[in-house]
Length: 340
Ligand code: NAD
Ligand code: TYD
Picture 1 (cartoon, helix red, strand yellow):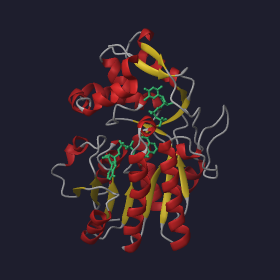
Picture 2: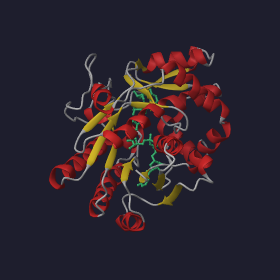
Picture 3: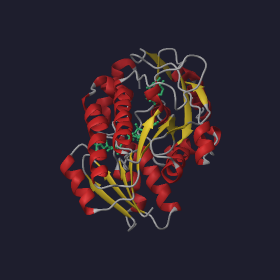
Protein backbone atom coordinates (compact mmCIF):
# COMPACT_ATOMS: atom_id res chain seq x y z
CA UNK A 1 0.00 0.00 0.00
CA UNK A 2 1.27 3.45 -0.90
CA UNK A 3 -1.39 5.92 0.27
CA UNK A 4 -3.59 5.47 3.35
CA UNK A 5 -6.22 7.75 4.84
CA UNK A 6 -6.10 7.69 8.63
CA UNK A 7 -8.89 9.49 10.46
CA UNK A 8 -8.46 10.66 14.05
CA UNK A 9 -4.68 10.49 13.68
CA UNK A 10 -4.08 13.25 16.25
CA UNK A 11 -5.53 11.11 19.03
CA UNK A 12 -3.83 8.52 21.22
CA UNK A 13 -3.99 5.38 19.07
CA UNK A 14 -4.15 7.03 15.63
CA UNK A 15 -0.96 9.00 16.29
CA UNK A 16 0.86 5.83 17.38
CA UNK A 17 -0.32 4.09 14.19
CA UNK A 18 0.97 6.96 12.02
CA UNK A 19 4.37 7.15 13.76
CA UNK A 20 4.76 3.37 13.67
CA UNK A 21 3.65 2.81 10.07
CA UNK A 22 5.71 5.67 8.60
CA UNK A 23 8.75 4.37 10.49
CA UNK A 24 8.36 0.79 9.26
CA UNK A 25 7.08 1.33 5.66
CA UNK A 26 9.41 3.59 3.64
CA UNK A 27 7.09 3.57 0.60
CA UNK A 28 4.01 4.66 2.55
CA UNK A 29 2.34 8.10 2.64
CA UNK A 30 -0.38 8.84 5.21
CA UNK A 31 -3.08 11.50 5.00
CA UNK A 32 -4.46 12.30 8.46
CA UNK A 33 -8.00 13.71 8.62
CA UNK A 34 -8.75 15.02 12.10
CA UNK A 35 -11.29 17.49 13.46
CA UNK A 36 -8.99 18.37 16.37
CA UNK A 37 -11.55 17.97 19.13
CA UNK A 38 -10.42 18.29 22.76
CA UNK A 39 -8.74 14.85 22.31
CA UNK A 40 -6.96 15.68 19.06
CA UNK A 41 -3.51 17.07 19.72
CA UNK A 42 -1.13 18.02 16.86
CA UNK A 43 1.69 17.89 19.46
CA UNK A 44 1.36 14.09 19.30
CA UNK A 45 2.90 14.26 15.82
CA UNK A 46 5.41 17.10 16.07
CA UNK A 47 8.21 14.68 15.19
CA UNK A 48 6.67 14.43 11.69
CA UNK A 49 6.71 18.19 11.06
CA UNK A 50 9.28 17.82 8.27
CA UNK A 51 8.13 14.42 6.98
CA UNK A 52 6.97 14.70 3.33
CA UNK A 53 5.12 11.35 3.61
CA UNK A 54 2.77 12.83 6.22
CA UNK A 55 -0.12 15.10 5.13
CA UNK A 56 -2.59 16.69 7.57
CA UNK A 57 -6.11 17.95 6.84
CA UNK A 58 -8.38 19.37 9.53
CA UNK A 59 -12.01 18.33 8.93
CA UNK A 60 -14.97 16.50 10.43
CA UNK A 61 -15.58 12.91 9.25
CA UNK A 62 -19.31 13.65 9.54
CA UNK A 63 -19.06 16.50 6.99
CA UNK A 64 -19.92 14.88 3.63
CA UNK A 65 -18.59 17.79 1.53
CA UNK A 66 -15.23 17.91 3.27
CA UNK A 67 -14.86 14.14 3.07
CA UNK A 68 -15.90 14.03 -0.61
CA UNK A 69 -13.35 16.77 -1.42
CA UNK A 70 -10.59 14.71 0.23
CA UNK A 71 -11.50 11.61 -1.79
CA UNK A 72 -11.44 13.80 -4.94
CA UNK A 73 -7.98 15.03 -4.07
CA UNK A 74 -6.45 11.62 -3.25
CA UNK A 75 -6.90 8.04 -4.52
CA UNK A 76 -6.47 6.06 -1.31
CA UNK A 77 -5.36 2.42 -1.21
CA UNK A 78 -7.02 2.07 2.19
CA UNK A 79 -8.94 3.92 4.89
CA UNK A 80 -8.37 3.29 8.61
CA UNK A 81 -11.08 4.92 10.72
CA UNK A 82 -9.85 5.79 14.22
CA UNK A 83 -11.82 9.05 14.52
CA UNK A 84 -14.29 8.82 17.38
CA UNK A 85 -15.55 10.25 20.59
CA UNK A 86 -13.86 7.67 22.79
CA UNK A 87 -14.59 8.22 26.48
CA UNK A 88 -17.41 6.36 28.28
CA UNK A 89 -17.82 8.97 31.05
CA UNK A 90 -18.24 11.78 28.51
CA UNK A 91 -20.86 9.71 26.67
CA UNK A 92 -22.81 9.55 29.93
CA UNK A 93 -22.65 13.35 30.26
CA UNK A 94 -23.70 14.00 26.62
CA UNK A 95 -24.21 11.29 24.01
CA UNK A 96 -24.90 13.72 21.11
CA UNK A 97 -21.33 14.00 19.76
CA UNK A 98 -20.97 10.19 20.01
CA UNK A 99 -23.92 9.64 17.70
CA UNK A 100 -22.74 12.29 15.24
CA UNK A 101 -19.07 11.33 15.02
CA UNK A 102 -19.15 7.60 15.67
CA UNK A 103 -22.26 6.69 13.69
CA UNK A 104 -22.91 9.46 11.12
CA UNK A 105 -19.17 9.97 10.63
CA UNK A 106 -18.68 6.29 9.84
CA UNK A 107 -21.58 6.35 7.38
CA UNK A 108 -20.12 9.40 5.60
CA UNK A 109 -16.71 7.73 5.33
CA UNK A 110 -18.19 4.45 4.10
CA UNK A 111 -20.16 6.25 1.39
CA UNK A 112 -17.14 8.24 0.23
CA UNK A 113 -14.91 5.15 0.18
CA UNK A 114 -17.52 3.07 -1.62
CA UNK A 115 -18.11 5.77 -4.26
CA UNK A 116 -14.35 6.01 -4.81
CA UNK A 117 -13.96 2.22 -4.94
CA UNK A 118 -11.33 2.32 -2.20
CA UNK A 119 -9.94 -1.22 -2.14
CA UNK A 120 -9.75 -1.58 1.65
CA UNK A 121 -11.47 -0.09 4.70
CA UNK A 122 -10.70 -0.86 8.33
CA UNK A 123 -13.01 0.17 11.18
CA UNK A 124 -11.21 0.49 14.51
CA UNK A 125 -13.71 -0.78 17.05
CA UNK A 126 -13.70 -1.88 20.66
CA UNK A 127 -14.40 -4.93 22.82
CA UNK A 128 -16.96 -2.76 24.65
CA UNK A 129 -19.51 -3.52 21.90
CA UNK A 130 -19.79 -7.04 23.40
CA UNK A 131 -21.06 -5.67 26.71
CA UNK A 132 -19.89 -7.07 30.02
CA UNK A 133 -18.52 -10.48 31.09
CA UNK A 134 -19.13 -12.15 34.43
CA UNK A 135 -16.28 -13.61 36.45
CA UNK A 136 -15.31 -16.11 33.72
CA UNK A 137 -15.25 -16.43 29.91
CA UNK A 138 -13.75 -14.39 27.08
CA UNK A 139 -15.17 -12.29 24.23
CA UNK A 140 -14.74 -13.97 20.83
CA UNK A 141 -15.65 -12.57 17.41
CA UNK A 142 -18.91 -14.58 17.69
CA UNK A 143 -20.02 -13.02 21.00
CA UNK A 144 -23.33 -11.19 20.37
CA UNK A 145 -23.15 -7.40 20.56
CA UNK A 146 -24.72 -6.05 23.76
CA UNK A 147 -23.35 -2.53 24.31
CA UNK A 148 -24.13 -0.92 27.67
CA UNK A 149 -22.93 2.70 27.43
CA UNK A 150 -23.81 5.39 24.88
CA UNK A 151 -20.15 5.18 23.76
CA UNK A 152 -20.24 1.43 23.13
CA UNK A 153 -23.74 1.67 21.60
CA UNK A 154 -22.48 4.22 19.07
CA UNK A 155 -19.45 2.03 18.26
CA UNK A 156 -21.71 -1.03 17.84
CA UNK A 157 -24.00 0.95 15.52
CA UNK A 158 -20.96 1.91 13.42
CA UNK A 159 -19.86 -1.74 13.31
CA UNK A 160 -23.32 -2.74 12.09
CA UNK A 161 -23.14 -0.14 9.31
CA UNK A 162 -19.73 -1.47 8.26
CA UNK A 163 -21.08 -5.01 8.31
CA UNK A 164 -24.07 -3.98 6.19
CA UNK A 165 -21.91 -2.26 3.55
CA UNK A 166 -19.87 -5.43 3.23
CA UNK A 167 -22.95 -7.63 3.09
CA UNK A 168 -25.09 -5.46 0.76
CA UNK A 169 -22.46 -3.99 -1.54
CA UNK A 170 -19.50 -6.33 -1.19
CA UNK A 171 -17.60 -3.33 0.18
CA UNK A 172 -14.15 -4.61 1.32
CA UNK A 173 -14.37 -3.67 4.99
CA UNK A 174 -12.75 -5.24 8.04
CA UNK A 175 -13.57 -4.59 11.69
CA UNK A 176 -11.04 -4.86 14.53
CA UNK A 177 -12.08 -4.88 18.19
CA UNK A 178 -9.48 -4.23 20.85
CA UNK A 179 -9.37 -4.20 24.63
CA UNK A 180 -8.14 -1.28 26.80
CA UNK A 181 -5.02 0.39 25.40
CA UNK A 182 -2.28 2.07 27.40
CA UNK A 183 0.92 3.84 26.42
CA UNK A 184 2.33 7.31 25.70
CA UNK A 185 0.18 10.22 24.44
CA UNK A 186 -3.07 8.94 26.01
CA UNK A 187 -5.39 11.76 27.05
CA UNK A 188 -5.51 11.97 30.86
CA UNK A 189 -9.26 11.40 31.13
CA UNK A 190 -8.71 7.61 30.89
CA UNK A 191 -7.73 5.60 33.96
CA UNK A 192 -3.98 5.13 33.53
CA UNK A 193 -2.85 8.60 32.42
CA UNK A 194 -5.30 10.26 34.83
CA UNK A 195 -3.93 8.30 37.77
CA UNK A 196 -0.26 8.57 36.74
CA UNK A 197 -0.39 12.34 36.23
CA UNK A 198 -2.41 12.93 39.42
CA UNK A 199 0.03 10.85 41.45
CA UNK A 200 3.02 12.78 40.10
CA UNK A 201 1.47 15.77 41.95
CA UNK A 202 0.37 13.82 45.04
CA UNK A 203 -3.26 14.33 43.98
CA UNK A 204 -5.96 11.82 44.90
CA UNK A 205 -7.01 9.13 42.40
CA UNK A 206 -10.76 8.44 41.99
CA UNK A 207 -11.56 4.71 41.99
CA UNK A 208 -15.14 4.06 40.87
CA UNK A 209 -17.20 1.83 43.18
CA UNK A 210 -15.16 -0.88 44.86
CA UNK A 211 -12.49 -1.05 42.14
CA UNK A 212 -13.30 -4.69 41.36
CA UNK A 213 -14.05 -4.08 37.66
CA UNK A 214 -11.62 -5.89 35.37
CA UNK A 215 -10.00 -4.62 32.17
CA UNK A 216 -7.68 -6.47 29.75
CA UNK A 217 -4.70 -4.18 29.08
CA UNK A 218 -2.77 -4.05 25.79
CA UNK A 219 0.07 -1.74 24.79
CA UNK A 220 -0.95 0.70 22.06
CA UNK A 221 2.00 -0.40 19.88
CA UNK A 222 0.69 -4.00 19.90
CA UNK A 223 -2.80 -2.79 18.98
CA UNK A 224 -1.37 -0.80 16.05
CA UNK A 225 0.70 -3.76 14.83
CA UNK A 226 -2.55 -5.75 14.88
CA UNK A 227 -4.38 -3.14 12.81
CA UNK A 228 -1.52 -3.14 10.28
CA UNK A 229 -1.66 -6.95 10.09
CA UNK A 230 -5.44 -6.91 9.58
CA UNK A 231 -5.07 -4.26 6.88
CA UNK A 232 -2.49 -6.38 5.06
CA UNK A 233 -3.78 -9.92 5.62
CA UNK A 234 -7.37 -9.68 6.90
CA UNK A 235 -10.33 -11.05 4.94
CA UNK A 236 -13.01 -8.48 3.99
CA UNK A 237 -16.19 -8.98 6.00
CA UNK A 238 -14.30 -10.46 8.95
CA UNK A 239 -13.89 -9.24 12.52
CA UNK A 240 -10.59 -9.59 14.43
CA UNK A 241 -10.27 -9.22 18.20
CA UNK A 242 -7.06 -7.95 19.83
CA UNK A 243 -6.28 -8.19 23.53
CA UNK A 244 -3.29 -8.28 25.82
CA UNK A 245 -4.13 -11.39 27.90
CA UNK A 246 -3.56 -9.08 30.84
CA UNK A 247 -6.57 -8.88 33.13
CA UNK A 248 -6.38 -6.64 36.18
CA UNK A 249 -8.93 -5.24 38.60
CA UNK A 250 -8.85 -1.46 38.74
CA UNK A 251 -7.86 -1.66 42.39
CA UNK A 252 -4.91 -4.00 41.77
CA UNK A 253 -3.77 -1.70 38.97
CA UNK A 254 -4.07 1.31 41.29
CA UNK A 255 -2.03 -0.46 43.99
CA UNK A 256 0.62 -1.31 41.37
CA UNK A 257 0.84 2.33 40.26
CA UNK A 258 1.11 3.56 43.85
CA UNK A 259 3.93 1.09 44.49
CA UNK A 260 5.81 1.99 41.28
CA UNK A 261 5.51 5.70 42.05
CA UNK A 262 6.22 5.19 45.76
CA UNK A 263 3.01 6.90 46.83
CA UNK A 264 0.80 6.05 49.85
CA UNK A 265 -2.51 4.17 49.54
CA UNK A 266 -4.16 7.09 51.35
CA UNK A 267 -4.25 8.85 47.95
CA UNK A 268 -6.98 6.45 46.81
CA UNK A 269 -10.41 8.05 46.88
CA UNK A 270 -13.38 5.69 46.38
CA UNK A 271 -16.04 7.65 44.51
CA UNK A 272 -19.58 6.85 43.31
CA UNK A 273 -19.61 4.11 40.69
CA UNK A 274 -19.98 4.86 36.97
CA UNK A 275 -23.64 4.31 35.98
CA UNK A 276 -24.00 0.96 34.19
CA UNK A 277 -20.31 0.20 34.80
CA UNK A 278 -19.30 -2.94 32.84
CA UNK A 279 -17.86 -5.51 35.26
CA UNK A 280 -15.27 -7.27 33.14
CA UNK A 281 -13.72 -7.20 29.67
CA UNK A 282 -11.39 -9.97 28.45
CA UNK A 283 -10.52 -10.88 24.88
CA UNK A 284 -9.87 -14.16 23.12
CA UNK A 285 -7.42 -13.10 20.39
CA UNK A 286 -6.72 -16.61 19.01
CA UNK A 287 -8.25 -15.77 15.61
CA UNK A 288 -5.90 -12.81 15.07
CA UNK A 289 -2.94 -14.95 16.14
CA UNK A 290 -3.95 -17.78 13.80
CA UNK A 291 -5.04 -15.82 10.74
CA UNK A 292 -2.94 -12.66 10.92
CA UNK A 293 0.24 -14.06 12.48
CA UNK A 294 -0.06 -11.35 15.16
CA UNK A 295 0.69 -11.66 18.84
CA UNK A 296 1.08 -9.05 21.59
CA UNK A 297 4.79 -8.40 22.21
CA UNK A 298 5.02 -5.84 25.00
CA UNK A 299 4.85 -7.25 28.55
CA UNK A 300 2.67 -5.24 30.90
CA UNK A 301 5.57 -4.79 33.31
CA UNK A 302 7.81 -3.24 30.64
CA UNK A 303 5.00 -1.32 28.93
CA UNK A 304 3.81 0.27 32.17
CA UNK A 305 7.33 1.23 33.24
CA UNK A 306 7.94 2.83 29.80
CA UNK A 307 4.59 4.62 29.95
CA UNK A 308 5.30 6.09 33.37
CA UNK A 309 8.76 7.15 32.16
CA UNK A 310 7.20 8.82 29.11
CA UNK A 311 4.76 10.86 31.20
CA UNK A 312 7.58 11.79 33.57
CA UNK A 313 9.68 13.06 30.66
CA UNK A 314 6.80 14.96 29.02
CA UNK A 315 5.60 17.39 31.66
CA UNK A 316 5.05 20.10 29.05
CA UNK A 317 2.72 17.85 27.04
CA UNK A 318 0.75 17.12 30.24
CA UNK A 319 0.58 20.83 31.18
CA UNK A 320 -0.76 21.79 27.73
CA UNK A 321 -3.35 19.00 27.74
CA UNK A 322 -4.47 19.61 31.32
CA UNK A 323 -5.07 23.33 30.85
CA UNK A 324 -8.34 25.06 29.90
CA UNK A 325 -11.17 22.78 28.82
CA UNK A 326 -9.69 19.79 30.67
CA UNK A 327 -10.16 21.55 34.00
CA UNK A 328 -13.84 22.18 33.25
CA UNK A 329 -14.34 18.51 32.41
CA UNK A 330 -12.47 17.37 35.52
CA UNK A 331 -14.64 19.54 37.77
CA UNK A 332 -17.81 18.39 36.04
CA UNK A 333 -16.87 14.69 36.25
CA UNK A 334 -15.31 14.55 39.71
CA UNK A 335 -16.76 17.70 41.31
CA UNK A 336 -15.55 18.31 44.82
CA UNK A 337 -15.14 14.57 45.49
CA UNK A 338 -11.36 14.86 45.19
CA UNK A 339 -8.97 16.82 47.30
CA UNK A 340 -5.71 18.36 46.16
P1 NAD B 1 -8.85 9.65 21.23
O1 NAD B 1 -10.05 10.22 21.91
O2 NAD B 1 -7.51 9.77 21.88
O3 NAD B 1 -8.70 10.30 19.78
C1 NAD B 1 -9.78 10.49 18.91
C2 NAD B 1 -9.30 11.33 17.73
O4 NAD B 1 -10.40 11.47 16.81
C3 NAD B 1 -8.88 12.75 18.12
O5 NAD B 1 -7.71 13.11 17.43
C4 NAD B 1 -10.05 13.61 17.66
O6 NAD B 1 -9.69 14.96 17.32
C5 NAD B 1 -10.53 12.84 16.44
N1 NAD B 1 -11.95 13.10 16.13
C6 NAD B 1 -12.99 13.07 16.99
N2 NAD B 1 -14.14 13.40 16.34
C7 NAD B 1 -13.81 13.59 15.03
C8 NAD B 1 -14.54 13.92 13.87
N3 NAD B 1 -15.86 14.12 13.92
N4 NAD B 1 -13.88 14.03 12.69
C9 NAD B 1 -12.51 13.85 12.64
N5 NAD B 1 -11.78 13.56 13.71
C10 NAD B 1 -12.40 13.42 14.90
O7 NAD B 1 -9.22 8.14 20.94
P2 NAD B 1 -8.29 6.83 20.95
O8 NAD B 1 -8.20 6.32 22.33
O9 NAD B 1 -7.06 7.13 20.16
O10 NAD B 1 -9.22 5.81 20.13
C11 NAD B 1 -9.11 5.71 18.71
C12 NAD B 1 -10.10 4.68 18.22
O11 NAD B 1 -9.83 3.43 18.85
C13 NAD B 1 -11.56 5.01 18.55
O12 NAD B 1 -12.35 4.65 17.44
C14 NAD B 1 -11.87 4.13 19.76
O13 NAD B 1 -13.25 3.80 19.80
C15 NAD B 1 -11.01 2.92 19.46
N6 NAD B 1 -10.57 2.13 20.62
C16 NAD B 1 -9.96 2.74 21.67
C17 NAD B 1 -9.51 1.97 22.75
C18 NAD B 1 -8.79 2.61 23.91
O14 NAD B 1 -8.44 1.91 24.86
N7 NAD B 1 -8.48 3.89 23.88
C19 NAD B 1 -9.69 0.59 22.73
C20 NAD B 1 -10.34 -0.01 21.63
C21 NAD B 1 -10.75 0.78 20.58
P1 TYD C 1 -11.41 4.01 31.21
O1 TYD C 1 -9.94 4.29 31.14
O2 TYD C 1 -12.36 5.15 31.17
O3 TYD C 1 -11.72 2.95 30.06
P2 TYD C 1 -13.08 2.09 29.77
O4 TYD C 1 -14.20 2.65 30.57
O5 TYD C 1 -13.27 2.34 28.31
O6 TYD C 1 -12.75 0.68 30.12
O7 TYD C 1 -11.69 3.20 32.54
C1 TYD C 1 -11.02 1.98 32.83
C2 TYD C 1 -11.59 1.44 34.12
O8 TYD C 1 -11.24 2.33 35.19
C3 TYD C 1 -13.11 1.36 34.13
O9 TYD C 1 -13.51 0.20 34.85
C4 TYD C 1 -13.54 2.61 34.87
C5 TYD C 1 -12.41 2.84 35.84
N1 TYD C 1 -12.13 4.25 36.19
C6 TYD C 1 -12.06 4.64 37.55
O10 TYD C 1 -12.22 3.82 38.47
N2 TYD C 1 -11.80 5.96 37.84
C7 TYD C 1 -11.63 6.89 36.85
O11 TYD C 1 -11.42 8.09 37.18
C8 TYD C 1 -11.68 6.47 35.48
C9 TYD C 1 -11.48 7.47 34.37
C10 TYD C 1 -11.94 5.14 35.20
